[in-house]
Length: 184
Image 1 (spheres, rainbow, N blue to C red):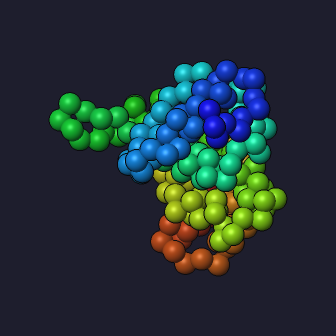
Image 2 (cartoon, one colour):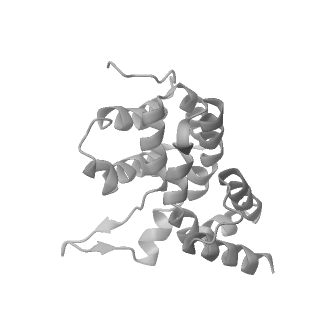
Image 3 (tube, rainbow, N blue to C red):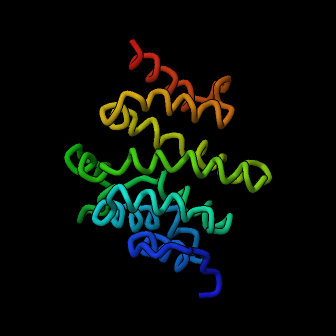
């Protein structure tokens, strides 16, 4: 394929990359309505182990900026099951099962931000996606903290890296309150 940049030999990383590559020029609804997110998360949930996450992180440096943008949006996107009535359903049992990769996806934010800095991207091309999808951290805060209490430090680090420490946006204020409550 013309725009293939992956150098990974890991079949699961290639499967993730294939979703990005095949839908890179798709109608934006594929990404904006979380279809891309759901496709990637299914691969993560069904296939990935710790080694695969490390291989994925290493391969991100080979991807184009646009591929990284799509990937960042997808890993922070929602994962909701669609019911027969056509209504999105986020029942707790479903959410718990479908969010077991949240810590791994969160941890990918650090190398993504680092790549943004290394490439000297304009107008924080990747950071703005993380800021736009800050609900990901708010919605999954408890999952992150239950996984490891060190996620409070990691979330604070994200704040610093994105320059959000002085922000008064609603999402940031909610997250600051959650951090404060968890630190007590």
